[in-house]
Image 1 (cartoon, rainbow, N blue to C red):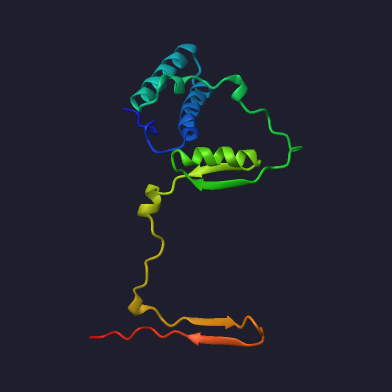
Image 2: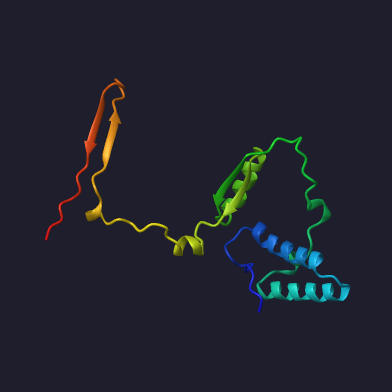
Length: 155
């Protein structure tokens, strides 16, 4: 069985639609004969149905939904990345769009963020002293320097 992003998963609808788009684009670009295209498209639709995709999601987007070619005459709109929260993210997207700000969604918890840890945390008893330099708000020529001492390890 082919495993793709499940339609019932906690991801934005745009991510789910892009799965359909990518697979149908691949079929259009890389399958050469008409018979193989028909077979590949049927296989893609069956695999997506098995992953919970409804029939309306398998239909290609209307031609009006396709973006026109980009021209550099339009200034680039600011973009904002937000974690996806079902229900809230869609409302925020509409709100920001009305202010000409594009948003994109990134998953808050990914398998990578749960598994990969680049640095090990140093235990408190092994941390060395930290030096702080605090400047006075009233007179910037006066500073306070402090060296925090590590805790004494008791045996």
